[in-house]
Length: 116
Image (tube, rainbow, N blue to C red; front, side, top):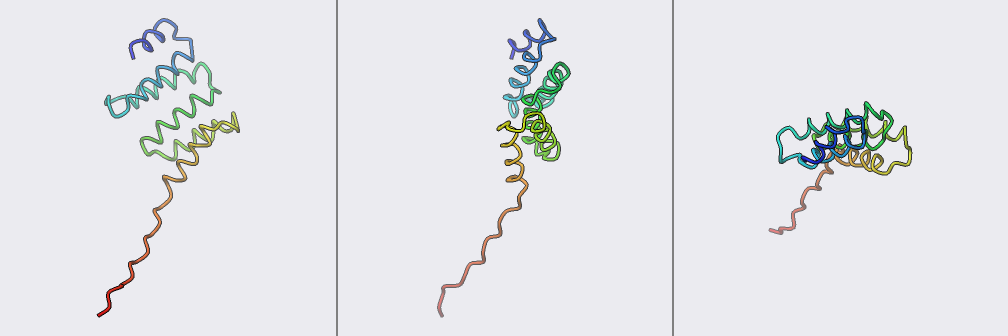
């Protein structure tokens, strides 16, 4: 984490440095209380420098997805796909939302096999 912070401090105009920082924070989700917020801020900084980066947009979608904010996740994945229609990570994100949003299949009632 320190290396990514040092990199963005030394070169805050590098979108790649912000992407690495965002990914590092994203990997801390569940371990550090504010990791989601830190990741989103880092990805936002990367997008200020490179607004058409499908990777950064998709990563934001993944953060939203992990937090079960499927509407914003889908919006980010769709935007990434507009920029790069064959981007597999964004395609997989859409599929994951469809799976997560699908209501569970009803279980069939058990039939009685007891004979009296």
